[in-house]
Image (cartoon, rainbow, N blue to C red):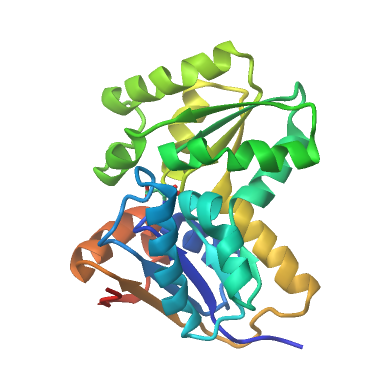
Length: 268
Ligand code: DGL
C-alpha cells in the first residue's frame, strides 16, 4: 500500500522551509506542495483573530491540491488555529507544537523546559498546555523573541556574529538562570540558530520543532502504509508576494534541498 498524493505544507512565509528541508531529507520520495504567505508575514506579531483568518485561506489553497496530509509548518499558526483547521477539513493535520512538546516533556531530566518563539505563540500558551499533557510536573518558561526572525531573515545566524549572539544571550540567559535543561526552538526560523545556541550553552537539550514534525510525519505515514513509493518527486512552491525574492532566500533556508520553482498566487 502506498499513498502518492501530495503532502501540503504551509507557513506564514519562508521559515516553513526548515520543515520542508527536514521532510525532504527523511522522505525524499514525497511530493510536496508548499504555500508561504509572504504577503502577510510575520504572523507572530499579529492578533489571534488575524492569524486565524490568514491561516484559513492558506489551508483552503493547500486543500485544493487534495493532499494526503496538511502540515502546519508555522508555530504561530499551529498554536492559534490548529483546532479550527481540524474542525473544518477532513485531512490528517500535523503540527509542530504537539510532537515537540511530547519530546521535550519526556526527555527533560530536571523538569525545567524553556520555549522560545514568537509573541503570538508565547501568548497562546500552546506549548505549556501540550507539555502538561505529557509531564504534569514540568515547569515551562516561555520567552518571546521578536528580534530573532528579522535577524535570521537578514542572514545573521552565523557563529561569531556578535549581534545575534548578544541578542540570543539576552533572551536565553534568564532561561538558563532558571535552570532549564531542555530548550524548544518553537519557531520555524530558529533551527538556523541551533549551532550558535549549542555553542553558547553547551549541554542544553535543544529540540527543533521543524525536525520533530518531520520525524512524526514519517513515523505516522509509515505506520499507516501511506508513504509515497514512486521514484522521483514533485515539489511545488507558491507564495503570496514576490516569487523571485522567495527563491533567493529559499536557498539560505534549504540549501541544495531547494529544487523547485516558485509561483506567485493571489489569495485575497
Ligand atoms: N513561521 C513563524 C513561526 O514559526 C515565524 C515567522 C512569523 O512570525 O510569521 O512562528
